[in-house]
Amino acid sequence: MVRMAPGRHGVHDFVEVRGIHIVVALGFFILGWVAVGLASLDIWRRPEPRFSRWLPVLGAITVALFLLFLSVYIPYLYTGTGSDRPALSVATVLEWLVLVGIIGWVLVASLTWWRYARGSRNTT
Image 1 (tube, rainbow, N blue to C red):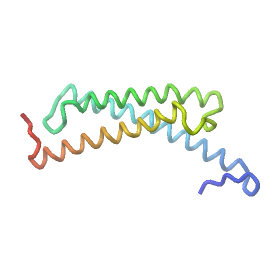
Image 2 (cartoon, one colour; image 1 turned 120 degrees about the vertical axis):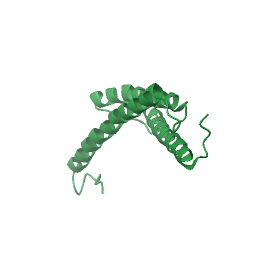
Image 3 (cartoon, one colour; image 1 turned 180 degrees about the horizontal axis):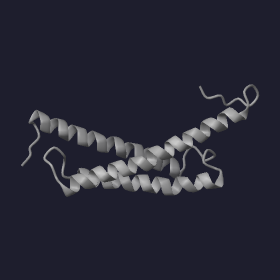
Image 4 (cartoon, rainbow, N blue to C red; image 1 turned 90 degrees about the horizontal axis):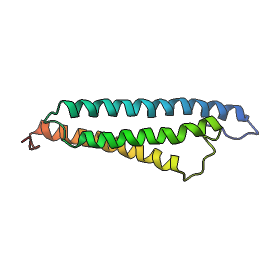
């Protein structure tokens, strides 16, 4: 549980949790665009009937959202305002679009692979 009350436990606990959160979140966003990008590139270069032909396009859009988010969010960290951003900002909207993009990419890849395995996906 995150302790944010400065009176009882001190602000130090919250600062530690925030620092760990930033490291883990940046790891997710950096490795996420690399993973989706490499997988989409591979599917584009070597098409397979298991995957939709337009999956690499969805992957490219998702990678662009990842990179756009990082280009907006990382400057917040250097100015010390990473956690001070308003509830609705460009960074927040991009962050949610990245999550929708990666979930959509995984869902489309999974569903087309599943339909192929069942034999219900038209592979012609």
